Length: 218
Image 1 (cartoon, rainbow, N blue to C red):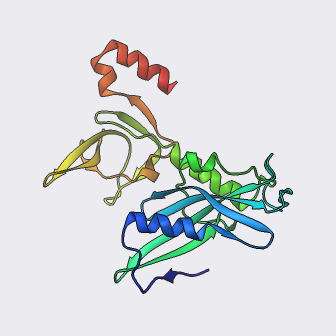
Image 2 (cartoon, helix red, strand yellow):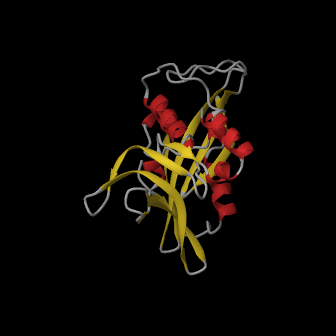
């Protein structure tokens, strides 16, 4: 399915967007009822868990999902969104269609029904979401080893960096100091996938914190 834009511009705020996502995930036929269980926005993308149940209470039979104990199934949905000349638009995908957006919070994933096929698109999508959630949120002074060397624009590479920041106006921007050269580099969160913290500035300043971080990283 392609993009759908609301030319009446009735969607303007976060609350408007959430109300529309709720409406899109809540509908009923003569046989089934679908309702939104939870939705979260990450960047410009909405991630949702929607439950499907039969009106007569009988179990929902589905080729993708294992029926839950109450007879329902809960699936994941992804809504890409953007504004074009003030008009809000979305493109929706069910998780089994293999959506590219893979940053669903773990709280959403925890609500979804089990999958029948471990090789399905939905299974791969959930794993990408978990991999994203597992990327550490490093703090100032953390010394980090990247999973693999990163090639920079000048052709050089770096693998061990220290989290720091620089200022642009009143804002602090996250960057990383390259151990070999002392230069600063911006790294995307995706670049930090599989990285490990070698040491922490907080831990180095306190034996108690050093022991805490050592236990947490082991």
